[in-house]
Amino acid sequence: MEAQANVTKPELIVDLAWSLIKMACTQRRHPFHTPTLSTLSERGPEARSVILRHADEENWELRANADYRSPKVNQLKGDPRSSWLFYSFPDHLQVRCYGHTQVHHQDEIADKAWRKSQLLSRRCYLAPIAPSLVISDLRPNLPPELVGREPTEEEAEPGFENFTVLRCRITEMDILSLRYEGNLRVCAKPRNTPIWIAP
Ligand SMILES: Cc1cc2nc3c(=O)[nH]c(=O)nc-3n(C[C@H](O)[C@H](O)[C@H](O)COP(=O)(O)O)c2cc1C
Image (cartoon, rainbow, N blue to C red):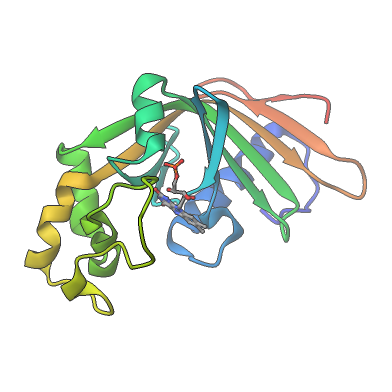
């Protein structure tokens, strides 16, 4: 469906949101490729960009990858409540996904995602200093022999220890479609008929 086509039912807006989300997993330049993932920390809400790696419309799931040592993983282990925010300027569409984001570490889901990842991406997980720690001098946070090149499969393997998949089970979606003829907004929940809400 075209983003600005005539809409008669909220289901069409939900279908549009899912089609863009699924497209964005593989299209690196798609505006939905880098959602904002928000979590809860002791100092309040924490938001950051992540790369959308996988989306499952059947099960209402979103996935991204992250370093096990990072604050976001710690926050999610403490409280999985989270939101994933998408906005596409060309489609005039905002999607807010609320749900519980579970951390997969050294399990089958993490293993599958690790095998699927590019060697250059795996290199990030070999960083000797854990994300967010203070560094004493300016230098790449990489093993010296891997600066400026991608690791071999074998060299990348120790990085698996730091690799996690963040898997969100969406409990609710709030979709806002900006339109000249009047904005539309939909609230959708898995296995429920979506409803219009005031934009
Ligand atoms: C475009 C973009 C994509 C990013 N993708 C990821 C990602 O997929 N996973 C990740 O852990 N961090 C990603 N980051 C870095 C995070 O936004 C963040 O700076 C970092 O992970 C530290 O977050 P934390 O301190 O809240 O754990 C990305 C940053 C940008 C700018």
